[in-house]
Amino acid sequence: MSLTRLIALVALCSALSTQAQVPVQANPDHAAMLASPDARLAANKRLVYDFWREVFEGGHMELVDKYLAEGYIQHNPTVPTGRAGFVGVFSQFAKPKPIQDRVRAPLVAITAEGDLVVLSFARTGTDPKDPQKKYSTTWFDMFRIEGGKIAEHWDPATP
Image (tube, rainbow, N blue to C red; front, top):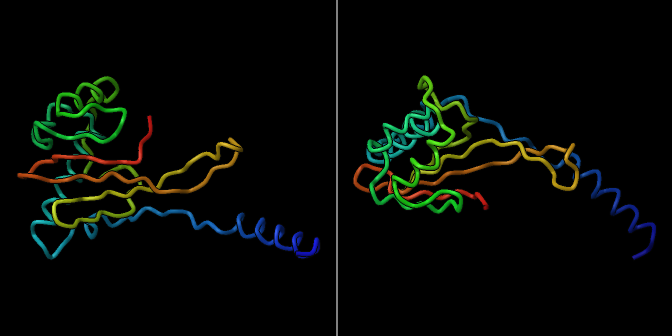
């Protein structure tokens, strides 16, 4: 490859990288995201959504028995498995506040299939190579429902 072509390729890649990303946008229509023609999927979505509003965002650890199975399995490396482990960690910093009618976090989608429900959120990250540079990305939390309660949780968290 000639030097001229290499310079042109580098310039093109640089131009594309600054314009390539489309920022992730939250979906303002939570009711539509919660809807499903399948009553079981709609109930699973509502269970996870209400858990997120009341317990996770609202900080109401006294409601955790309503949502989490006793043997709740946690795959996040910073939170122990079990309902008591969840309460132990989140009680340290989540103080009860008024429960909102909607999830406050920038929710992009609620997806349900079988016994799984995924909440996807818009999130802003910081480039580790350039702390002044922000980028748009997506975070997810996936839950498995069993017996009308959340039995398992996954997310992309690292230690």
